[in-house]
Length: 419
Image: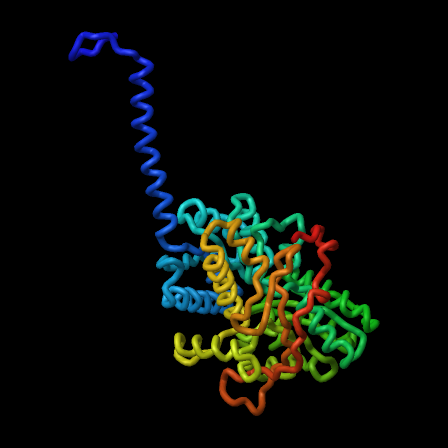
């Protein structure tokens, strides 16, 4: 083979190598360009949550508080000048939809990490996608299973409380006071099942007797078929192990049926949004647990600071419990990115797992073996009298301090303690 301009022979192998080198130079430049953008472009956080469905009120509060954390971070200059973008997606309270939206966030939108969820089931599907792709996920919804070794990964963090710790805290407060015979009215999915287990385990120390665990489908609007049976069993305590609209409907119908006259009604998670939706009469006297109540501002400085920022951003409104988790879930990962000086999932995870932080409710930390946030549980009672304003709906009865001893053990979860 010869060069047409000179007629001299040409080494074909040399020409191919030269062309390949040119191609590599172009590809290398493109790679460097992408890497440069990754280090200078926006920090992208995916945020799947059920904007539609039974938990939409709580989800919308999660988004509001998460956006507040992002705005606060960006107003402070971001990280090395890089601002944060929150990419919110509706998982429709469906595990398959949650997995699809998470995959799109990772593959199409190229998010750096994921925060979100508002269901025990959807968070497991989100976590499975993140686990397979080594993307950090900070869950802000209650679940026991997400901490178990079979579902967990090094990139899994759990900012929310677990049913075990929430139900346990309410049980330790309420069971010694109201009698030993218990009936559970339980939403028939992971959240309800795990809450019952938490109550029953904590109740062993008080000799509690389970008369019945009556289960209902998620999204039940009519509880009338269950109430006569509950009344006939004559429990000392009725535990409403449901959430969102289910909790509102159950509380209203239990009240209308007159069950409160003969038994104490408690619930593992006494939602601020449910109390607002259901009203004072329906929830009067019901006791439950929560990860946060804005009334903590009288005793915790960071609660006051968080509430004030939320009020300023949202026309005087106060944050809800699950809203606060949206704020903390975002603040945690952004703090870790700043300290790690990187958005790399491994680097961020290594910082988060050793963090001690106080963003809104007192000091918290992630337990090393499972990355569970160790935090306080607030036990509250709904009130209908002596309310200062429409936001003043709970009396704080007790605050159970953060203590790893109240969590399921690392061994039970299948973990070896890491250092």
